[in-house]
Length: 165
Image (cartoon, rainbow, N blue to C red; front, side, top):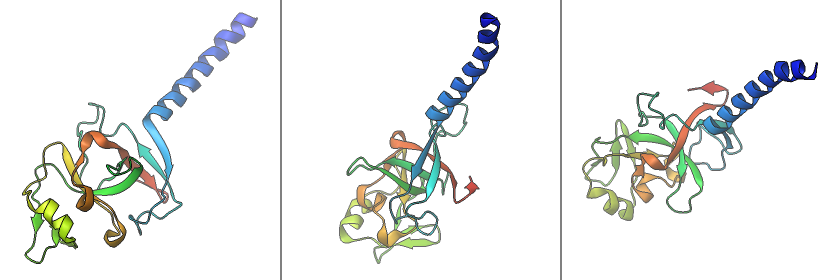
């Protein structure tokens, strides 16, 4: 009787533990703490991050797509931050004569330090991306710390505000 019960419920317990392990290693549930992504993400909002989106060969693209919202460790303080991928490896880095970073139809203000750092680069280096906050005047992003290595990216935000991406 005990053996039959163990065999029957052992399979269910094993399946539940396997599913829990997959969820734990594949996804993070995080809370936004910064204003750099307002209005898309607001402080206090919960997000779900796919940690394997750029890690497994099953996902044919191992680099983010344009406009993916990604989570990575800041080069400054190694805290997790969330930003949007705006330029991919090989994309041109364009700074207009007035000193603004041009990305598609958008213009991003550059301080003189930011302009000096980015002006020497004509293309996004291999295995890196340029990330920017949606709230550019309240965002510390690639304008401040340069390009982000794809290896530094922890995952892709796949759910926020009830919307899956």
